[in-house]
Length: 604
View 1 (cartoon, helix red, strand yellow):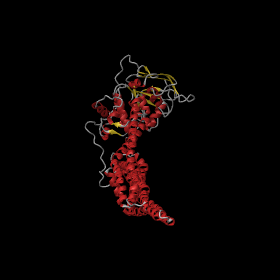
View 2 (cartoon, rainbow, N blue to C red; view 1 turned 45 degrees about the vertical axis):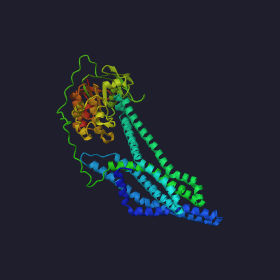
View 3 (cartoon, rainbow, N blue to C red; view 1 turned 45 degrees about the horizontal axis):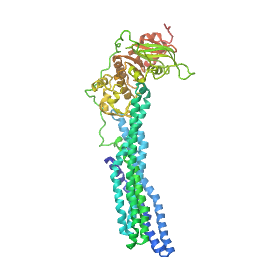
View 4 (cartoon, one colour; view 1 turned 90 degrees about the horizontal axis):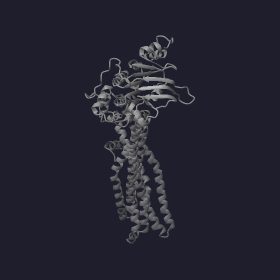
């Protein structure tokens, strides 16, 4: 029914609680007393009581059946108490295993905390607990109830027991043969649901990046494929329910048909009417409900138990001598070495050809969030020449990210115009904008798929050599090596915020668009890696606009735009230190030093 790990864990949990299982079996035997005696007592009540004209004798036999039912009902309460003694310790063991595995992964070399642990500790462990308890109930119920009913049939009339047992065995065989396929399809359904959730969550979280890249159709297609895969898995799982119905029909209802059709012949062979009625009681009140419960329980909860426990066992390996020692930090393969960190600011980009339109031209730009809000930008004009490297700085809320959205065409101004390479952003199709610029936001979009597919997202034709060269240039070699190379499958949820930013940076570096906008796109990287990324983009060619997260980004840029109150200023780093009090304060805050003075200087 499941993988060897699930079977081993289940049997280990049962063996460790043999005494509790013994009590459960003992009370189950008492609970099955009505199933054992029901048919015999009904046959006696009919043959020796009502058909013989002894009404009181018939009632006495039925009273015996009522007493057996009461005893069985009393035993049911003890069954649940004994069940808890088996299930709850198993649940505690799983919870401890998940916690130990999470701590091991978080504290080993190169490891990190796994947010999915919360889901395993809460939802998945509780699913295993509930389904494990349900499986124990239905399996032991079937064994004791069906066994009691067959024993009663043997006592009543051995030929009847054989006639009933044969279709029952066939029905169980059909169900047992279909179980491996049911487990596989259940696992596929769970996996498809998880992949759909990851794909949709990634698309929603990175919608700004997706729109900026003009990749809406690709992302919608990717999510649509996940939706189709989950729907196919659900339909296949639903079709498997037909096999459960077949096993129930053969094992549960065929014996009834056999007994009804054979009743006249059985009576002619000397079997009493009470015995035939008693046999029907055994089948309809004992065997049939027990078979239905075990088929539905194992086919439903049992599949969830196997898949969910298997996932916990895979993601939370037990600590101890059988666990491999903590892994050392991955060694860097020769194919993707990390580049040396540049020693100083990058030189200017190649000059644009004479007569080329500016990379960015903003004229009279006004933008506000709401008709009565204060303008974020008012009559704003800026020109960024092709090949320029501009850093944008300012206090929080000054409008830096708004400016990036306006340049990328993700927001429309209240008035004014935005041109990229001479083309107006307003009215230009997203696909055409994607060929002009690429925006890397703070929260980067990473999709489910291979590492190479993610890096080639904006340049699908890039060969491995080109991709690996970009990986080396941006210092992403150790990350790609740890993930397993370009062909390795990438789980977006397993990446840290900085790792997602690095993937998005390599993707943007490979993009053919001449204008790159980094909107605090390296804020989760350490300063050394951030410098490597920005130097790489500065040497890439084209135009670079950086919404700065650290003052080092401004010192590396050719020009700096500072939001200084209502009048943004543009100049070099050294120039703005003398011209802008706001810039001096920002530099002092970033470098944790006191600005040289707070006296405003005149502005030209």
